[in-house]
Amino acid sequence: MFTHSIVVPNESVTAGTSPSYDLPVSPLSHLLFTVKFAQNQANTQLPFANIPLMISKLEVLYKGSAVCSLNGIDLMAAGLLVCEFESWGINALGDDNDLLSFTFLVPFSRQLYSPIEAYPKTARGELVMQVTWAASFTLIDGVSLQVEAVEMPDANPQRFLKMTSSSVTPTATGEFDVELPIGNQISDIVLFGTTIPAANVATTTIQTITIRKNNSEFMYSKTNFETLHNMSGRLRAAPGYWGSHIHQQDAGAFAQYYDQSAVKPGNHIIPNHLLVPFDVRRDGEHILKTDDANDLNIRIDAGDTNLVRVNPCEVVAVSAR
View (cartoon, rainbow, N blue to C red):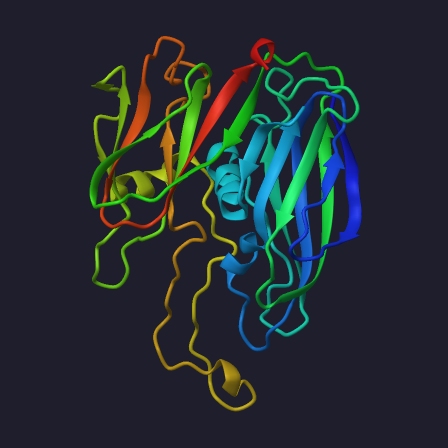
């Protein structure tokens, strides 16, 4: 049995603030974090990137220690790639003052509604959510927040999902290492690289990755950006709803939409993200175990010196919380 309830009903959002909210005390499968807002431009669809940019950081803290700490776009990518959660938009018609909404998943389990994998029972006030809103919102106004929780009151979970982020800016092109956490099993890694191929330029901030455990290549001896990026859709839901494209229309009454070019399919909405899966079947067969590791890192071959974010998805035993 699960209980779906409202934590924050419809609260006005002020840019630049960092409000906190107490979360429910029963075992928690996931939160649904919904932003409602008005588009503040006419005659064109709001760029999707403006929506996750509203969230500078979303944290879930247990006694001050982070269980989840991601920005908006990494949170959206992790929900999609790790948990197969895709938010369906509504009313995205490109008109000024259109009322829109988008739901971000805040998961404590890779398989939602699982009685085995969820955040365990807590006392009131021990588990809180804190959101840091961006200093300003672009082409967006009238923002409000809804938060809903899915609890598993009869569950006795054995483990839960922890997701936190590391940001690294390489000092030079070529290989560099980012340490991965040791102690918990790692199910997946969600990566972000600033630069991706554009037009006829093939530069990528993340050119290749290698996983190294105890000073040796492990599972991923080396894989390219293109293959790793393209295979993400093989295992996970396809993020298609908010992608954009252009249709040719006759001039006249709809002159503002007139375009004589051919139809242009757009990139999907997380083109800069990569999924590095280990526990591909969610049965523990290939999960990355770290309790026998003296050192563990991901080696990235950087094509430029722009920002990289590394978001390991740890599966934590409740006894180790």
